[in-house]
Image (tube, rainbow over all chains, first blue to last red):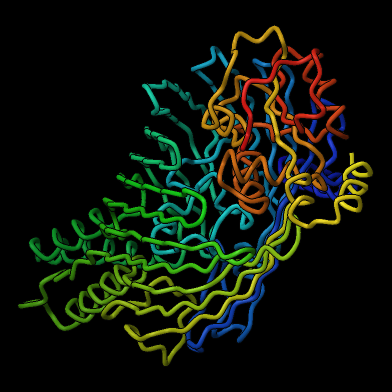
Length: 424
Length: 137
């Protein structure tokens, strides 16, 4: 409760402070800034929702034909520069979330100690550096698109860690190299429960050569998902397992217990390998990223990536993005029902179906083509219009959620998004 | 600076001549105590794009034509691109954007006073209190 209140108070103070002070520096130590996006999105799929993150319970399509909730957000930030050695940053973000509110949360709150010109240490709540634009994931104004390509950015939905990191920078000729190592824990509320990363750690390397940037990263996460809606499957498997064992059907009992063990949502060991590159000489830009995700439990392995490019014509920057995620969802044969009494067979059939449905629900495959343009129509504002054609994978809901009776997996979905990004 | 320029235009009554007068030469300046005697456009661009934080950059006011010319020629980027780049850096806390000075004279004054300061001004605003390390053209 105290934490909630502090979070809220800090966020409100930051947002109000930011609005009142604009980009003005109070003095050399404190600077208050903010950014945000006001956007609306339309989806042609009326039996499922398009959402901005896995933390949103509903969105565009089924719930609202045109919906502001997926992309709209506002954030306030306080940068504190105490000395050349010590600085700190607090960022509060308000966006539509699990409980159907826009309650602000503290996205970052960390202290940085610059040990030497080359080595920096941070402690506190720090961005989880999963991908190329993770640090500006929410800053629409800093990015070419309405939103970072979901096929890739959904792979790492947790965006910050409570922990520590160290960054070592070393130039080599014209190349600016840096290596970052991090460790921390995170807890996030989901519409259907709670996700707890305990811990996640990783390393990443970036090299900048003139207008080119390369990045390679690795993250290992031990994830616990507390999802009440999935618990009946595990309770059912455990219950059926002991009943089968008691009745002398030991091999079916073992199958039930091993299913429960294989797909449990506790202590899942996840890892993500990623590679990214961008090149922006001024008139045009191109960037591409790929990630290989190794799942556990109900979370399937996946490969994902995107390539995007744009060309600047005065204040307009039209762009094209192609993105895809392919999840390797296993089909689980489950408990063999041959020779089981009718009651046990019915229970096993139901649980087998439940396991396969969950496997589909937890992972999605889709690819998309997006075209759009950014228009820098006035200082500190841009307007973006984007059209996405999503092609959902076979039997997959892709990245859509809140699917309703009548939803047909594997179809095509058209999205139209209009958003204004701003910073102050 | 504006008035003499306008007068020159009226007197010359030649658009081409006005263009060349208006496109004042821009020079990059550092504190006289700085070890650098010359800098390349790449080095200056790295500082103004937040890649190199060894010096503290100063900007001319947003209304200054020299500011747009400086970024176009040194970094090959226009105002909106520069803003998007700084949005990325500022909101990650990686670097502080250039501070906006009140005028060219103010840039010269701040560079003369700050050992780690770097700025850019029209050549006509130069004086002995600062050191010119690059002519942008």
